Image 1 (cartoon, helix red, strand yellow):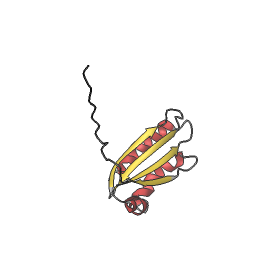
Image 2 (image 1 turned 120 degrees about the vertical axis):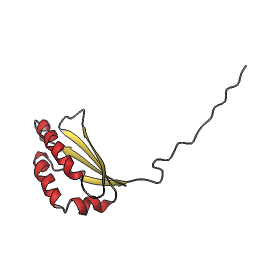
Image 3 (image 1 turned 135 degrees about the vertical axis):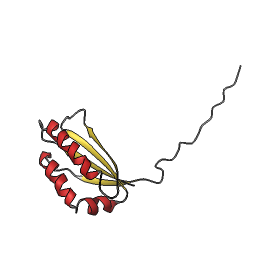
Length: 112
């Protein structure tokens, strides 16, 4: 699984319009090959900043399959005019310890 991470700086005052447009755009991305899930989070300290997290099966599902699709052109038309500056997108993979359970620790108490 690959995690796409994008910090979206929306033009101040455009947050409501952005969220409305994103509600349409999420239907586009969710139908793409390799798409797993997504989350859009709004920053508490800066209300015009959002964090977009998208899970993909493999990197090329996003970088080739989505970005080179006709659906991406629809996504772009709906959302890209809201950003200033244009977002940087990074991709993350699991580490060897991701999801590993913490070692169990047992404590014994002595009675006095």
